[in-house]
Amino acid sequence: MNKYNTLLFDLDDTLIDNSISMQYAFQTVLKVLNINYSDELFHKWELFDIVYWDIWQVEKENLSHIIKDDRNTFLRANRFILFFKNLNINYQQAKRLNEIYCKNLSVNIVEIENASNLIKELKHSHKIVIATNGPHQTAIEKVKKANLYKHVNYVISSDEAGFSKPMPEFFQYLDKKVNNYDKETTLIIGDNLSTDILGGTRHGIDTCWFNPKEKELSDTITPTFTIKKLTHLKKVIKK
Image 1 (cartoon, rainbow, N blue to C red):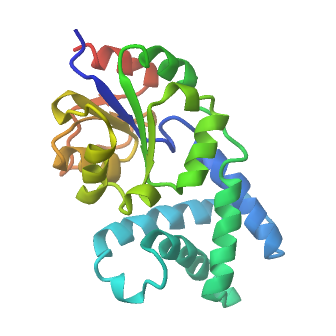
Image 2 (spheres, rainbow, N blue to C red):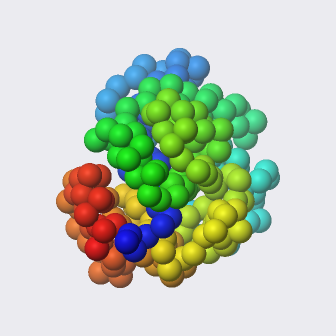
């Protein structure tokens, strides 16, 4: 008998290669801005995006007084104002750039380690939930293009929940959304220690850190399991 009945999968960099998706979307934004693409500029964007969201997680309360739209719309648009600060982009322009960017995030999709085959196999014995901090419609399109959609029970996004991982409200929304859901028999699988693993741990869910690049483990965040390949998940869930 399996210990886990429900598997919560992160999407970006767990089931699909997010860097490839971001690269294509970033190129479309640069075309709108009449800026030549370079790998160096894209690498700066990737690093900026990581740091930006990390800061937001820490200072989310301090940002509340400047948010002009719903939280996610504002924060996603604000990235473009800050990254392209020399262009003096206003908020409405930034919102438009974000719309273009998000729309194109689902164009170039490459799954990680034949993730669709793994999900197809696991769906017969587990409830499959995708839990992502990405835009909802973009997430749906990504899941469809990765041949995952017909194999999953739910796709839950931060847009839908109104909060992002690791915030407790995201997981509280998930508790209500997923039918026949029990934290004791649930495992969250993701690549991000500070969102997937921390969020799951705080909510009382066992966690599995997908760490193909063998990153260093944080001193303050300890996953229940760690795997280097997605296929190793099958051994974990049978323990």
